[in-house]
Image (cartoon, rainbow, N blue to C red; front, side, top):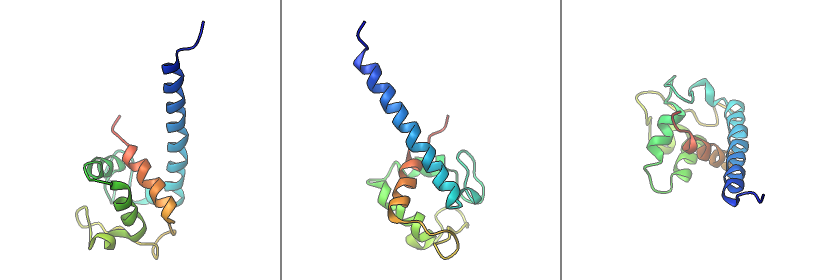
Length: 113
């Protein structure tokens, strides 16, 4: 019996998505994102699920989110979520442009379970 190409493709896409999500969560830990954020609940800052939902409504959200990840609240002239201020690289580990884009894509893919 020949394997169904759609099932093979779906399995490949799923394994790729899982492989990409795990390193991004690890990157978020390394960059101290989890000190202020959680995947599914507000901590000091909004949840990754909330941020993803808001940014998914925007046109071309990855560079916008990457700017905030790298530059903090000042990238958008102040706090975006209540009074909490997102720090820039002077107050937390530096995030490269490629790391910020990787984190942004991961956050955008984070959806409620």
